[in-house]
Image (cartoon, rainbow, N blue to C red; front, side, top):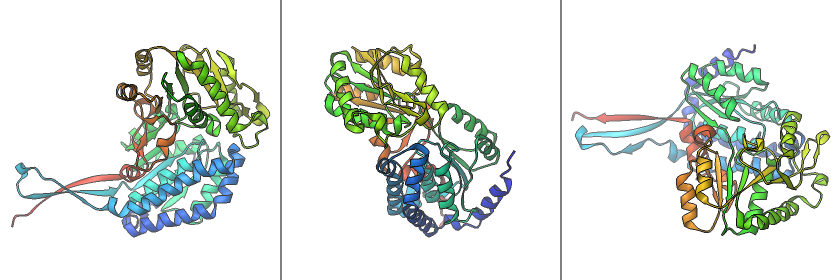
Length: 434
C-alpha cells in the first residue's frame, strides 16, 4: 500500500511558514496558474482528444475557458473577499467590536473525476489557492493522458510542498484518504462519495461532496418547443451525456410530446449531422465497462431516435427512448451517457410527488413560460440548482454557487463561494476597557 505521510508532513511544514496566507502570494500563484494553463493549452486539448475524443471547441469551452474565467473572477475580487469583515454587536454585549476573519484550513485534498478532468480538477484548486491553503490534487485514472498533463503543469510551476498532483488508481485514493487533511473536496459518484465521507469522519475532516443523481427536465405544455429542443440536445449530449448536471430524463406534457420529440430529432441532427457515426468530433464513452452498462438500457421502451453502438470505438449514438415508465431499469440510477428516456405526464402534481419521493437531484430544468408553473416546481422540489428555459448554464456562472443537496452532494463552490468553501470563518469579539 502506498504511503503519503511524508508528502503530507512536507506540505504541513510549508503551510506553517505562513507563506500561503499572504494575499500577494495567493494572487501570484493564481496568475502563474493562469499563465501555465494558457501555455499548455494545445497539450491539454490534445490530451482531452485522446482520453475522451473531445473536439477542440468543446474541450476549450467546457474545460479550459471555465477555469480561466474562474481564475480571472477570483483575481479581480480576492483582496476584498480576504479582508476581515466587521459586523454588528448586540446591545446586550455592551461596547465591543465583532469581526469575522477568513482563514485557510491548511492542507487540502482534491479528488477529481474523469468526465471533465481539467475543469473539475482545477476549478476547486483555484478555491484552495484563493483560500490560502496547500493542496494535493488526485486526478482520475480513467483519463491518464490528461492526468499526466496536469502533473506536468503543476510540477513545473509550483513546489510539491505547496501544490502537487498524485496520480494512481483506487489504491492511491484509499491511501491518501488515510492521511489527515484539513479539508477534502471530492467530485464523483454518490457511492464513492459515501466512502470519502466515511474516511473523512475518521479525522472529523470537513468536506465538500459534488455528486450526481437523476436530474429531471420538465417540458410543460406552454413551452417554446423549438428552443427547448435545442437547449436539451446541447445539455444532454455534450460530452456524450457524461455530465453530472445533464438532463437525465424528460418529463413531457402529453399534449406536446410528439411535437417535442420531432424537434429534438431535428436539434440533434443539427448538432452532430445526419450520420452521427461519421462525426469525428463526437465524444466517446470513457471505458468499455461504462459502454456495456449504458448499452443494456437500449432495449428498454421504444427507440424513437438513435440507438446505434460500436464497442470498438466506444461509440453510443445520441438516443431518445420513448414509452418509458418509472419502473424501467433506466430510471433507477443516474444514466451518465447519451440516452434520454421520455416519460409523459398530464398533471404537474403527479410528477412533483414522484420526483420528491426519490433522491434529491443535482439539477432540475424547467421549460415553461408560466411563472406560476416555474414557482410551483422551484418551491416544491428540492434540488441542487438548475435553469428555467435553459440547461447547464447555471454551472458556468461565478456568481451562482454550484453544488448538490441530499444524495446529490453537500457544500458548493464557484466564485466567492469557492473562497468561502476553502476558508474557515473565525469570529472575534473585541472589547476595550478604556
